[in-house]
Amino acid sequence: MRLSQYFLPTLKENPSEAQVPSHRLMLRAGMIRQVTSGMYNWLPLGLRVLKKVENIVREEMDKAGAQEILMPMVQPAELWQETGRWDKMDAELCRIQDRHGRNFCLGPTHEEIVTDLYRNNIQSYKQLPVMLYQIQTKFRDEVRPRFGLMRGREFMMKDCYSFDVNREEALKSYNTMRLAYHAIFKRLGLDFRQVLADTGAIGGNYSHEFHVLAETGEDDLLFDPNGEYAVNVEKYDEAEAPCPKNELEQKRGIEVGHIFLLEDVYSKPMNATVAQADGTSDPVTMGCYGIGVSRVVAAAVEQNNDENGIIWPEPMAPFKVGIINMRAGDEATVAASEKLYNDLNAQGIETLLDDRDASAGQKFNEMDLIGLPWQCVVGPKGLAKGVMEWKNRKTGEKLELPIGELPKALVQ
RNA sequence: CGGGGAGUGGCGCAGUCUGGUAGCGCACUCGGUUUGGGUCCGAGGGGUCGGAGGUUCGAAUCCUCUCUCCCCGACCA
Image (cartoon, rainbow, N blue to C red; front, top):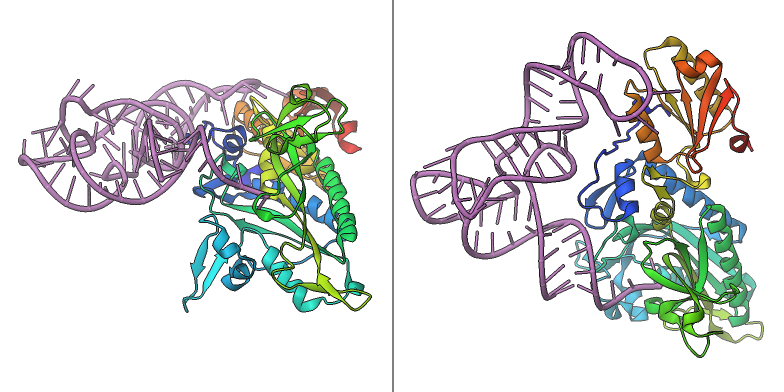
């Protein structure tokens, strides 16, 4: 992509409405723009990151044996009345009516829909286990949306649901998902922790949260010195903990994933059953597994930034390399930067070429701001010496390499 | 929902107390200049001051109502 043709509206100054780093930097880096409280436009640069996260999540879900589906965002009230949540949930559940006056809600989660899908199409233990997931927009009318993408009202979520013949089998599915979550956050390049958690409004009786560690996190987490025990402060129980609270290490985290063993919390009221081998039938045993995909993007920024801007973990970077053409008017410089750009693209290395006729300072600053892992400065000074100057955004390390040669760490 | 702050060109802000018909920086356009960390000079375009009503000869400025955004709290799969 050539920056001269790219819709990347960066901001030099901090937007007044943005207080937290991820919100401020994502606005400044031209990734998102607010539409109204808790709702955002995703611009090209931001969307590339969101897609990167989506794809890694999708690959790991598929690898774990889950199958992707897509359910409607607008859901009929009748299903929510079956589980009692139509009345139980407060204004967070955004209710609307169609032209006939029939009640619907904007889906904050999809247990009802997926359980309905299950009961209408699966009857026997022979058809289980089944894990279904989707990556889709959710809407929760939060009491107080805040911190940009960290707590929006509309956001992107991966939600997965498992169906098993009994609790024992369900625990296997649960564990498969738990391990998939470890694989996902590891692949994303984030520093994260799995902790014991409360089940809250989703229900069920067994639950873990996944947190990206960051000073700005909303949750307090406790760890034991051996790393065996980890819990959300809300869930801390003196009796279950291996040691007193004051001996546990405390860190702040951003909740990006939450998994629940639901058992029959939804299947029972919705009469979603499974015929067992002996001919009897029981409520199917369910689990649900969520990842706040858009929140992951914000959490990554909270965890990886400095005074100059974002520092993307490589797996979720919108582009791997940013080339800075130092002299838009100089033929040799233009030719050299274009050649590098074409070579990198030919090798499948996603590259952004700053081919604008702008000042050096502006180019350097904006490249740091958007946080691509590698920068390559192509200019008359270097070319005269037969080199291009590479910079690693994270370490700040600079390398002068012969024209056309790539940093080893980039190629591997 | 309780408490607090704020709405003035695309962005950041001043002006509001002490009414007189809108200003600065950035961005944008044009010309020149400069060229390795947000160059410099000059010339331009763009807002009627969140909205409605009121007071007044006259309202961004005073009064009333209202909408929106942000922060703290409560809440939060």
